[in-house]
Length: 137
Image (cartoon, rainbow, N blue to C red):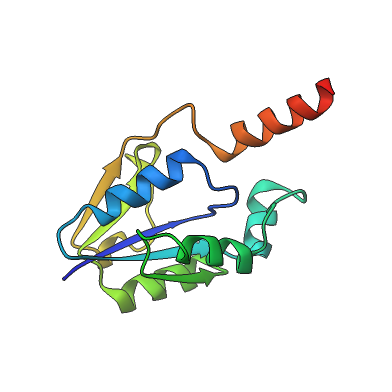
């Protein structure tokens, strides 16, 4: 079995997330483990208006997808690294925006697979679209 790990916020699921997770599942006989940032950590990174969905909701949404086998929540860089170290993934999937950047847990993975981000899909852009639509009404 090929062990795949993906991590991120996954606050407002959009097509970019689904395609990323579908790509993770595309490895033959894959087991896809998703690690998500805690609510506290998201607020620290994204501001007081985020996350939109709680960590419980985000984990539940992800676990309901056919591409995902397991979901856990992490609160610190050290906790993320511990999850990855314990799992010992064959592959870590990261967005292409992480090329030449520090990747937590990299040394515990067989390889890093950089997935090309689909620029028109991002949570920030989706939230901006929603706000713009509500402002027009």
